[in-house]
Image 1 (tube, helix red, strand yellow):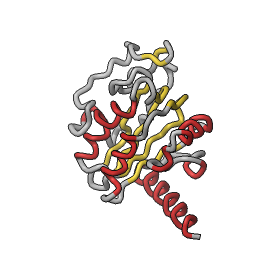
Image 2: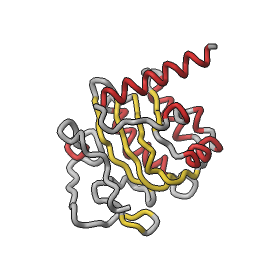
Image 3: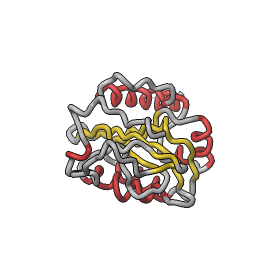
Image 4: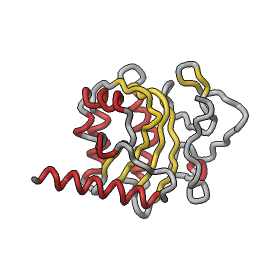
Length: 194
């Protein structure tokens, strides 16, 4: 797992450690020291620890004028034991919402498992952004992770699933990813009307 790096091709546009609106502002990364682990396997030092023991993140891009952020995740998302959503919401997401982010695109292809609990923080997240036209989408969720999320009924608060899987995002610019997500959301809304 140590060779799975967060996506780095937008670093000329955005670096979360340079962004005062993130909890990672001022963080210095040592490319040669591996200290964080998932399942006793070291992970790449570019991943950011936000308080979870099994889930790590990287804010790949944030645009405060357009109001969207692209975030990549790795590890086991465990709300049941570690209350990962509480740490994510309080320590990362709330800062971004306060700074004007209302559209969240979360890349989940490296989320290996999901263990749900109650939906309180997901409902709060939706409440915080829905009136501003915001949303949370998960792209490239593994099938078994989707099923685990379905069993917790996260689909009431977050958009994910078939239409957001097989999403070819690498090589696109952040605004193109936003446009693609918004197109999928529009199609889903139209299909619900018919």
